Amino acid sequence: MQELLRREARIIPLVVGAMALTACASASGAAQLCAKLKNFSMPDQRVVIHQAQDVPASAPGATPSVPAHCRVDGVIDERTGRDGKPYGIGFAVALPAHWNGRFLFQGGGGLNGRVLPPLGATFSGDRSGLERGFAVASTDSGHQGTGGFDSAFLRDQEATLNFLYQAVPTVTVVAKQIIAQHYGKPNDRAYFVGCSTGGREAMIMSQRFPTYFDGIVAGAPAMRTSLSNLGLRHAAVALNAIAPQGADGKPVTRAALSDADRRLISDNVLEACDALDGNRDGLIFAPQHCHFDPGTLACKGGATERCLTSDKVNAVRTVMQGPRTKSGQQVYPGYYYDTGITVSQGLAGVLVGPSIPESKPVGTTMDVEAAWAEAMSARAMVGDSNSWTNLSTFRGRGGKLVFTHGVSDPWFSAQDTVQYYERLGTDNDEVPLEQWSRLFLVPGMGHCGGGERTLGRFDLLDTIVEWVEHGRAPDRVIANVTSAPGESRPLCPYPTYAQYSGSGDTRDAANYICKR
Image 1 (cartoon, rainbow, N blue to C red):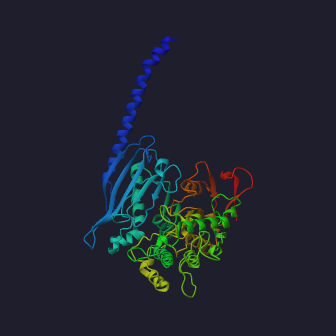
Image 2 (image 1 turned 180 degrees about the vertical axis):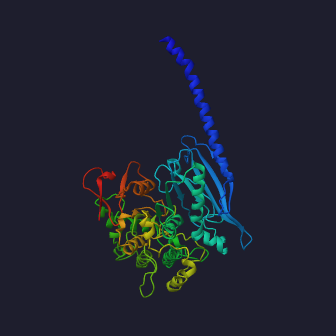
Image 3 (image 1 turned 135 degrees about the vertical axis):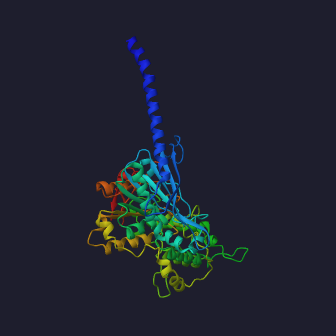
């Protein structure tokens, strides 16, 4: 036995040393393989690779957590614009050392303008796409900007078209070729996940480039910003009409309703609609069935903190019903009554004083018909994704499309996404919609996240993969309450909603069914 132990003592260091040498050789080989991408080119694309760098795995506990990967940064179609500024479609591709054979495009946000780290973390639960082994791409959509809403690039035609719809498919083609060269084989499947502008990009890919992706997740899509911005201006005007004036003589929008007013509204919305799902838990799971009337809060005598004056009732009703013409025609959908409409932290709720991502001044009056005519111009429609519903090619080749939207989103009405989804079913009625597309509304959630009490953590990346590759349609998606660790609920595909079964822990998603 002692001789055996002595022999093992001599052998183990040799084995460990050999393993270390193998690891070093492997790391060196990976770095060399990555560096070769610096010379990547395509015969039909003007691609310049600025960097191809081997990136080590992050330290344990680091945020964000990233695995070892090759990071490629480049630009497509570099040029000088009419305004004398440099343009080009900037992009990045992350190629993990342990690739799962899949490609994931990470959608953008705002007006883009910078290449975000290609991690694939949107709606991916606790692990990003890159951590799971996806090769991930991202893009600035064809221009560089400062902040999230730098619109200077819109003066350049090509840059505008790239942002609206050309950049993502262009980068997709290049990224897929980079993947094939790096790994020696093409990707097996391709996915797109995005929110806001990324949600619009997701819809554009399903509509205009139906063969590029197998599975697409479109979150809170900015599908027609000219009209959603009109909706926000309309809400601000309604609040400004009853708001006190500041020192500059302009209305203080956020003071139109007091903190007490907003608490009163929130409490009574919950009182009216919280129990629709069988459990009073501060979450409204059936917003389409919540028919709250702010008129029930009208003061019967003098004004108090327990009622709303008639002008405040009218303002709330006007905001929530959305902009309409004088004849009553709906211009843009209204907003669901939900817990986040009065949230003042982060991106404020629509009844607080909506933040409008554009520079047009907002006063106390508005010509809805004139604003509608301007918003519906052909120029505004070029990059919109609301009107096109013919997805027969995408659907026909087995494509799966998942939508999600925070019910309390103050920028883009969740009702707009619901209405598009319903039209998608009507216009593609030869195949039942639920066989290839699902919509998940998230109670309490704002724009792509946020909210005081909401189901802010859920995994749609695994959901879309399971559906595309294994045919497992998402009959529910388990989501966790952000503010209450250990508490979960199911997100149910619209028009169904989570309903408490009547027994078991109300904090556990297992005790809820999806009810129509």
